[in-house]
Image (cartoon, rainbow, N blue to C red; front, top):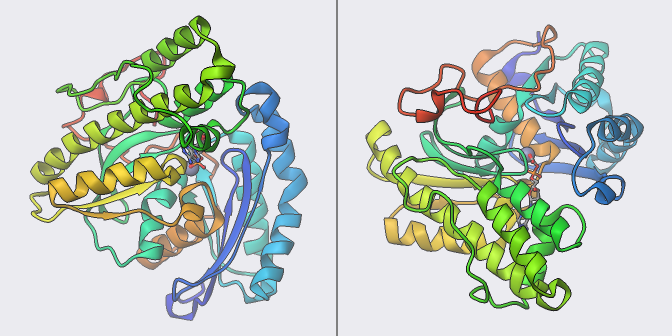
Length: 363
Ligand code: KG4
Ligand code: ZN
């Protein structure tokens, strides 16, 4: 078994959704490479990700992405000391491709393999960039998740809120589809918003100021769709984008404000650190509003650089390394997990422990 102190270079593979991403970092937190191939061209006709197409594309791309990542880092595989891959949650086909590929690399080079929880990857990404001690409050906003989580320790997470239906990322993506913009919707809506008036249209803000800590976005999406049908979308797309972006941002800020109070109660910690992560956290309007909120609430705010917000390899390498430092064991017996909540022993403060829908809340 590789000794912790002998580790210098760590490789991370991310294939849980539609990006084939591989990054290499060193233990001094330097990112030696961060290579990503997206599959937007394959999925854009469908306005969302088609799992089977995604899995096949990962299979097609993964060895090219690995070669490019090694080349950029100026390293060979024999120099990698720890191999990490996303083990879940996500689309099972992609998870199997990435984790099996990674296990084979680790096994053939007699090095440890770590399966990383994708959400832990996002959660810990800020620690790759900044010096942030536990505990901190995490706003995780991506295509798959919209959650507020108390990150107590490397593997102790308490979920404060989650979405009861759609995520913020899905709301951007589905609304972009309504506007015929393409996929992924978030960056396209952000771009158009710059030219629009965010007060042009009034949209509903589900759960706004609610005592239930959770998010909900399906009503907003339905209202947006109805509104779009009633006006000239081509003419109004900038105003529609800006109004939608403002509405999503207001909902995120309102729930985060609520969670800061909950976090203080749970953790009994005076100076709160707020971390934003996930693809939606690369939105400049949302980052700005979170910064303003943190000033009003007197909390410290951290958001990783844009390229570490959306799915990427370095965040998986870093989370795998943090895991190995604490647990000191390889995970060759790990099987990919499409569902893998960060908080398996659900916290008692979370009213969503109740089963909602067929499979319960998104985990
Ligand atoms: O974290 P991520 O890359 O993948 C998941 O784990 O889901 O997040 C992807 C999501 C997509 O829904 C995409 O539309 C959204 O993040 N996104 C954005 C922006 N960039 C990506 N949403 C709003 N503004 C952006 N600039
Ligand atoms: Zn993600």
